[in-house]
Length: 207
Image (cartoon, rainbow, N blue to C red):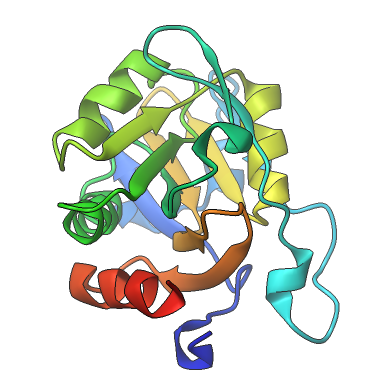
């Protein structure tokens, strides 16, 4: 494993704003929620990671839904390398860059790129897949209900907050790319901006 690629998994949330207004006014999700017409859906990891190798705190497991309405689990991708990332389709910059890099890395390989949307209100499994597949034939999108997304996010130690008010719809989420080997084991975790060439090299090196 290239330890230089490993980053803190819960070091903070990246703000992606969409809708009629953005977070440019400096308000936080909690402040936005002061508007009685809004709501906040927040998922934080259940516990802080122990000292040591943070990879050991991650469980490679999810139970989600694909574009055809079928239940999909991590077991379905055994035999192939997987690059996996969480985000949402209305994300203006972080998610497009992350999924672009993933798509470049899995191109012309037997690897699979998986994009999981945390925006359960706007991103159906079909919408998530339409988004992901624009970045390459080896890219797929998955989603599910709130409970399913929370379970997957907790397994991968991903935090996110969805805030909806009359004037704004914002999503904050931690953004990492998880490299999983053909045996279903987590190999490494990369920053969302890691170039596709570097991700591809990590898969080749891992073998």
